[in-house]
Structures are given as C-alpha cells and as structure tokens.
Image (cartoon, rainbow, N blue to C red; front, side, top):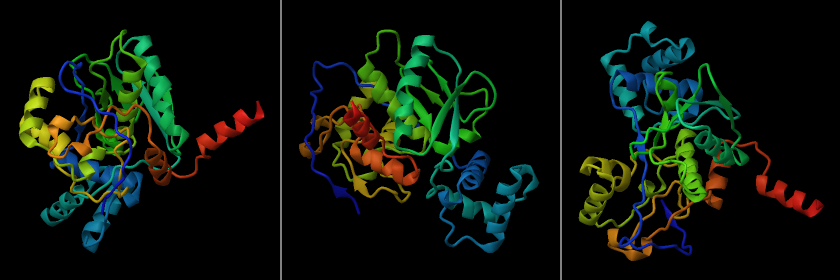
Length: 302
C-alpha cells in the first residue's frame, strides 16, 4: 500500500515556460540478453530476485550460471526460461552493499565531466556505495554527453550487461550554459537510476489526464505514446521496496496540474534528495554514517 505524504508543492504553469526535459528509463527486453541480465543481478546480490516458486532444477542452473559467470556453459531449458522471464518482471537491480562503482566518461568537455563529479557523489553521503572516476579499464557506469535532447540511464546492475564500449548513461541537454540547478537535478536523477532507483511517480496511483499527457510529451519531448506509457503512466509491476509515496523525491518527474484529473497531485521541479530518498537509499545500502549528523557536528565545532 502507498501512503500519500502531504507536503507543500511547488507548481509550474505549462504556458510561457521553458521546456522541461525528462529522462527515459532504460530497460532490458525479454530476450537472450535478458537472461544474462537476470543472472547478473542475482550474482551481484541474490536478494535482487524473488525465488519463491522457482523449481529446484532451475534454481540449480541459476546458481551455476551465477557462479561461473559464463552463460554459454549453462543450458537453460524452455521451462527454465519461462520461469526466469517471470522473475525478470519482479527483480531488483541493486548493487552489492559497500561496492565501489567505477565511472568512465566516453566523451564530454572537462567542464561537463566536472559537474558530474561534483553532484553524483551526493548519493554516497547516504548510500554505502562509492564512485571512482577512472579514465580507462572496465567500469560499471559509462557516461556520454550526446546532445540529442535525451537523458537516460540503465537501472543498477543492468549497467553490467552493456558492452564496455557503450554508454550506460547519457546527458542529452547539458552544455556550458546549463545552470547548476539543472545539472544537479538531472545528475542526481540519472545516478539514482544507476544505483537501482526507479521512477517515483510510477509507483503511485497518479490520476493522469492521459490525453493531455500524450499531447504534452509528444510536443515537448517528441515521445511516442508507448514511451509515455513506459516512463510516465504505467505503474511498475514489480513490488516496490519503498512503500511510501514521496512527491519530493529526486526520482519524481515534475507534474503540471494541467496533466492531471486531480490538481492536488501537481509536483514541481525537485533538485535535491528528499528526506525519504536519503532514508530509503540508506536502508538499501546500509552502513554509511549519517551525513547530516556529521555536518551538524562539524558546524558545532566551529
């Protein structure tokens, strides 16, 4: 069950305002690559999969694939594939707790790269994860700045299934004139995806005016109806770890009242981690000393 937290809302009017760019959440389709994706998530963190109902035979093959890391050595039967594809719909993509995620830039100016280095580690103040920016070698996260107007990221361990020569994240509207507000909100959102967070608005029963939503995102983002359904309207079929709906989450899209049947669900531009974001990510990756308490103690020593 989702509990709606009533909080003060910033609202914005659709008329006479700049286009608000929204990210596309990248996912792995149900195919051979998806089997690799499932095994990768399980090998990284076994709790990523809900194994209830999985046959012993299929579980043994899954364990063997995770142990060897070589899908070619494992022969999954049609029965195995059917069961594993069902798992795909309920799996999580969280990294191992305490993991250091290596990040490499595929392109982009030093200025843009430094903005990512500045804002992405904010997550690590609360999550027991670290980001290590490297110039070469294998990495979990690879960042591009292809100026196509689209920002996106694969979710958590899905990144580990992408070819090392390809990006796992893109920032499509950054340039030298981008404001720090826009840098921060977009970088935190995409790196939230990279550490396993999904869209907040797709875990709640938002009362969308579908006709208005399709029209707005087609005109402002050039999205198809399927893209709107996948990234805006459709609720996740997987069980959500965080059962509390948080309209202030950095993972929440801004929502104009004109896109809703109930204007009270309108949400402004979130540019910081909410208190719920901090608590949630600390519960998924526990062990990091509370950052806010640390800052408070430093301030008291001055």
